[in-house]
Length: 393
Image (cartoon, rainbow, N blue to C red):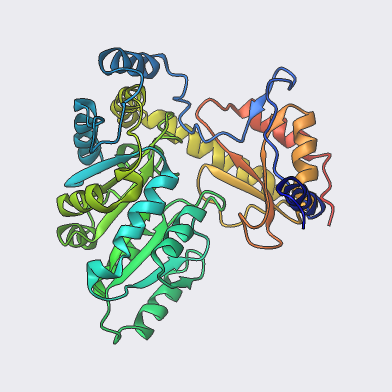
């Protein structure tokens, strides 16, 4: 029998042979004049001096750490203020803060899917390309996923109709901007479907928060009558992160007051985790104050992404159904994605090679994330390198 080290090395060697071995990027030894297309810092706020100073001020007032979970010593006044700010930002009755998006999804969604909550097992409809944390939350809850084709609401409608007579609670879980595909959801059409079948909707706005919707408040902020009706029923639950366009770390769930209280009581990621650092709270609060006024940055970001898609498509590269600031170059094979990433790195362009199982088989890609600090010269530099790239099978 192999010991742990031998087993680990064998497993890693298998991943290497399958071109699925992950290693941490070494930015420290990289050459100068780098252009980073791998970052999720979409509004380039992570180094904003006002945001950093606000974080430092909050840490000076409350300490470097929160010292405990929110239910013990960690419920500092700054958390209450931030949650009220988020609720207003998301046009929601209440909000609750988590330390990470994965933690929020994996533990809050499992509460929503608890059979004892509904006195029946929910019918759970999920986009097949949802983020791993959403899939894992469903597994944790022990509820079978009924998966609809990616971003295909017609297919979702068919599945809902097939189960219309089941007399069980219905939950729909989806992202609004898909982090690997770069496409976006039709929020109003989804809300109308959910109203028709009295479904609860759980939206992951990780890649939309700050970048999309009115004043960058996300696609889930809508005055559509169906959205309003779902909110009134407590059936409109929106999750988002502070680690992408907000430029800091952590996550939130915007929801009803009743659900917030339930999560405080039953969400293991909230109950048993130390609350985030006060620095994070102060920095996030300041970022949320700035984001509504960054309309020019959002407009320029979307224009830059549209221009990059045209460039890539003109060169014969596939960008899938991308229509946001996330632009994949779909290569097919893992080998081809790794080759393209390496070629771009040689030219000082940092990108991410995304391979199965993060994406479906035979859809490996190089993921390009556009940020507010990017310039047309940066996309032109990328274009020039791609002129000399030929994808291998």
